[in-house]
Amino acid sequence: MKKMVNTNKNYWFLGACFNDNDDQSEHFINKGEWLYNGNNSKDIELIRLISTGDQVAIKATYVQTDDLPFDTQGYPVSVMKIKAIGTVIDNPGDGKSLKIEWQKCTPEKNGIFIPA
Image (tube, rainbow, N blue to C red):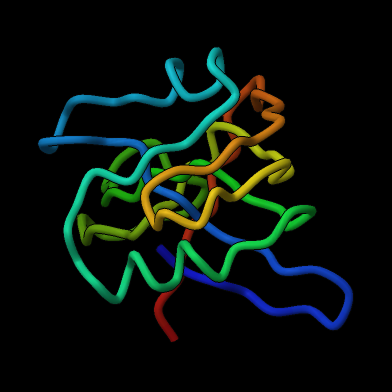
């Protein structure tokens, strides 16, 4: 989980995969929620900081070597896919769950990280 700060709003990236390949994105979007599947106390404390009105995005990260808009000479490039964006409508303060008004990204948005 990552937090980006702006003077007006907070923006958070949230994961949705449990046990490597068990993608919960559709479930979260359909139920208007997000659930944390872990026990890391640092993550739990960060989740407690998320406020009503904060903006969130379900993201997935991976590496890619093919089908890129530039030649990587076979080297992998980090990619972040945004599956949905939303607004937090409630944080019960348990560090494990959020109620979110989701908007699915169709098509999903990809961001490519180019090393300096």
